Amino acid sequence: MGQSIDLGSREVNTAPSEQAGINRLLRVVADKQRRAVLRTLAAADGDVLDYETLTGRVVDRIRDDDAARSRSEQLGTVRISLYHTHLPKLADCGLIVNDSDGKQVRSAIDDRSRELFDSLESLE
Image: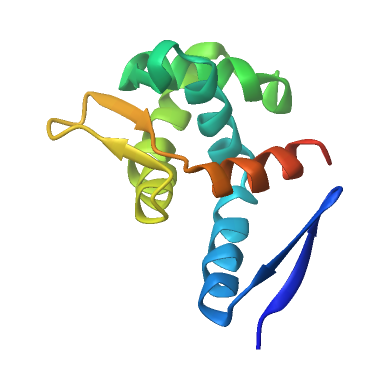
């Protein structure tokens, strides 16, 4: 039996397999850096950025969290965490696509995921 999920003013009925997908999506976007990646790509021209530009823009979005560290230190930390943790999780969930040489990242959010993500953003 499906479950009813309230997305603001709209209610969506989901089957059990869809619930699992939604739960997985919620776990992935629960992380602030991953949300910063998705917001940054959504704001980019064509929803695509090269890896270094993406890293810099994510640092700019989350920088207030660790203002004591230099931008250079934050770039290094974020670069590593994006490459090894956050981008693979977003890609596994189908929210981004990395090009074959790993130099560009593109948003791959479908309409339903975007609606859910937008609803979550309104809570922040």
